[in-house]
Length: 509
Image 1 (cartoon, rainbow, N blue to C red):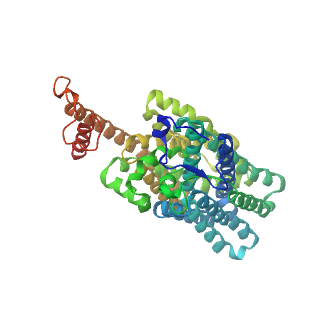
Image 2: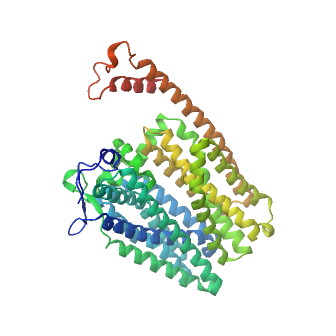
Image 3: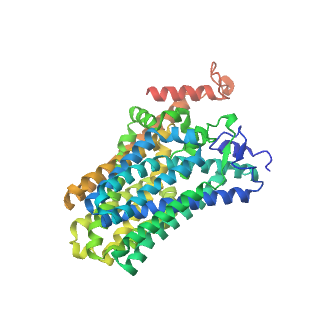
């Protein structure tokens, strides 16, 4: 199949290249095309399954009522957060990425099916929906970790067959996945608008039955998708993927920090890594309002804007179209925002994210429902939310990777914890709050977003100056010592001694 991989491919892998990759099934596909085809099938199954969940979440308050809709989303996020922090690495370690994906998607179907059960049997709607939300959150907690494991192993095989740089393979696979993921999310959200526009609210049961069928079919199809895995005899876990491929953080975008962060301990869970980072680095507290703000804003849109404003003014048929605006705008502006961050730095981009979310809150706060509930007001409102989501999904994650290069996995675990807990609190609290109280909570968090980011950026700049000064001070001069490394620095390469000493002194400082 493949020859010896290039040195850059060996350096860039998310899983150890000492282990020979194989494919589940009779034999390893001999072409890169077959590996890519398997990855595309996985992406289709995952995106259809997850897209049904997202579409139902957007309709929860509208179809189930504000109270049950809010509480069900709160249970979903609570179970997701706890599972992601405490159980996900162990589950994926045990089952492997393929089996974890397959069974997680099956369990995810219970959330979608609970909507159909609630509408068909109103007497059991509360236990059905809350139970489905708990099981769905449990599945969501490990699905993204499993997807990251599958992604990393497939990209590894692909890079090895073509003898290309691992970064090239992961970038290509990431683009393929993102295209299918966002495209199918848009399509499934628009489906609700098409059904309600054609048949009215009377078609709710048929709509959720359709979502359930699509989610179930995609989950069953996942069992038939081959996948790349590492030889279990050379470091993989019982499921074949092991912690090396499974414990990668949130999806494809985090493949880099997955390899770096694993030195902290995949089996101990992300919560341990998050708590260690909180103890050692105050920047994670400064950046917390960014993640809590996004949780509050997403809850505000799903619970209040979708479930109250849009339902009372434009009707349920408009929710799918408007929520699609968020995904579409986020996709369209992601690359321009990344380009802006590369040219002007991350500060303008991060402050832009806080500003557009704040504009969204102010518009809801000031405009009466009659004026707010029009296409002319709501389309820009949802578009602004799409820009904010793009900032949080892209530049914010890049910022975290830069600020916490020595503990990226702990930093990304904090994103899960902060955002997940904020969403949980919001979905439980918002049904019992007035609209103005909800909006002021969101606005206060956005103010802390801006202030916290500026404080974290200043601290990071100070740390970089200190690091550079220590390295310059400890690096041997050209005329003394001949540029040899510090004596006694065992186990490091040329020049490694002074680098380790600089790192130790910086940590003490």
